[in-house]
Image (cartoon, rainbow, N blue to C red; front, side):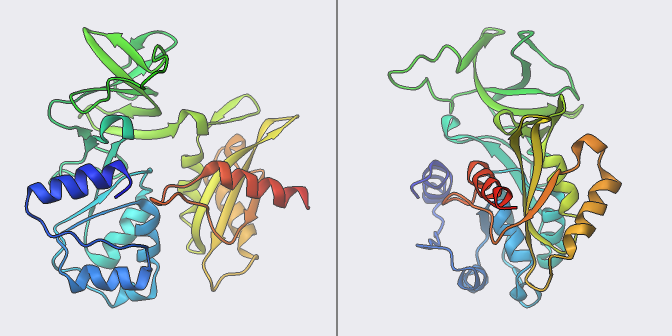
Length: 305
């Protein structure tokens, strides 16, 4: 409950609706999976890493979540493969949403009856959102990649005691918050996450999106988790490095198979320069991948090679 989503959406909205809240002091995966069924939970907000771990856990073939009416994903992009695996194991579709602390925190969500996989949905009522090009100072049309900007009653007024000139833009008679996230909007008004601007990899002069590479690597049934980062390199700008956690029953021989998968599915400039096996992917307390920590780990491993 230290996180704004826990305070506003889970605690605040839950109490307003008179819901009973099931709160876990810490995540113990087996107890968590059993208790969701034991207490007949109806709403389950989670993060992609949690859904991924649950789908691949030995209990996934035993537990039935009959009572669940709504499963919501946030905090990070939900890979379609993770959503598909969860649905296959538990028979429940995941409803992906989007937001940030500066917007209290939700701005988008998929309508539960019109879920579009690979999209974080449409703006909430009374919320405006667009795709903006800060260099051209203009809004972009469907299919064009730009920065997500949002405006609405839940958006903060600004950072206290700080210069907010780069935090907001003023267009079309509204004040818009710059999120720092890149996305596209389709013809139906659904938004599709591309990458956080700060996570983009510049490789050989090309712009490379880690999420695109991670999506391909997740197609391997040997992979438990993956995180792709850029590592500074004097020749190519940034080397593309994939940090991979294998499933317990798999060996390092899988690395070559993953490389072959990338060769088959990705353009040459998008293929990982290195595939590094790690024990785990560092995450925040809310389960969000910490790419900075991942970068430190792979740099240490590469320096020892």
